[in-house]
Image 1 (cartoon, rainbow over the protein chains, first blue to last red):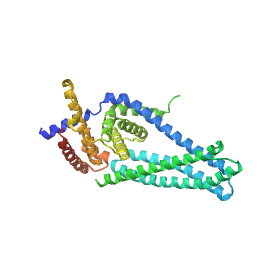
Image 2 (cartoon, rainbow over the protein chains, first blue to last red; image 1 turned 30 degrees about the vertical axis):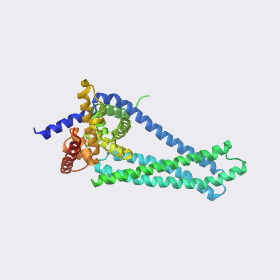
Image 3 (cartoon, one colour; image 1 turned 90 degrees about the horizontal axis):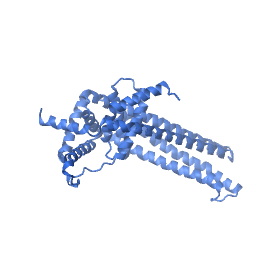
Image 4 (cartoon, each protein chain N blue to C red; image 1 turned 120 degrees about the vertical axis):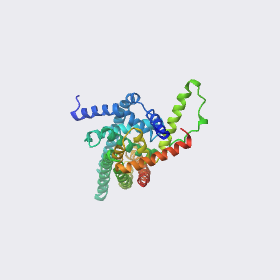
Length: 192
Length: 172
């Protein structure tokens, strides 16, 4: 056995010391439970947010000024539902990519990132449509109900949706930024 | 409330994976992160991905290569989203150890330098080296990475040279 083999054996021994079975088993069940709980809560929150947003749009549709306005509202409601479904499908696709071999994983990862970029663009389009739908409703509502910006009614019907749209826009930017980073990593790994 | 048979089977499979491959998964995670809190997050994501994948496992590959493939793919994505590694510390930066702890400290330092050198490798070399350090054969490495056995052999040779170059620079 030459020195290079001894070096490799020493490296392997050092590597094995990085984690021992007893320690990992003790913590892995807790980590697993936490991960599953976190995933369920995340999915639950997304479903509730989508449902509340669609319900809000449905409520606003009752006061649609005309057929065009109503169509816009239906498009926004449908868009919110589509975002939720799209997000679920991308999560499933991402999971499939983890199970794929290294080369296939990169292909699937690249495809997922491109879809995430398109989804981020779609989210922004839905936000714009949402504003086009809600702004006339807010203006008319404030006149009919003589509301000011600081009234409770304005808080419920205007500020909460605005905050929701800001959060959604921030989320879309984060999705875009992560997808671009992952695309860059995928490209450099494929080039290796 | 009783579990459905498929859920119960997944639970049993997951328990077995944790016992038999948990340490491997934890070491794989250390190849992609250098902070304990990131390691905790990545381990949770790896375990969740394995849990979700187990119902699809048909035995085409060994369970070892199946879970390691998931761990490395998850690690690549995680590192891409959070890529930040601390620079390798100089020996002079380490605190003066008590004589009785000196050997342990030197061992910890050498392990940290090995991990840091592994993280400096590009993704394909890093995976090949980590799998090789886990004792996987060239064929198993090829299976995880989705390449031919001859390509895996070439990749591993290059990876070992690159790792040695990084290590020779900092004296393990």
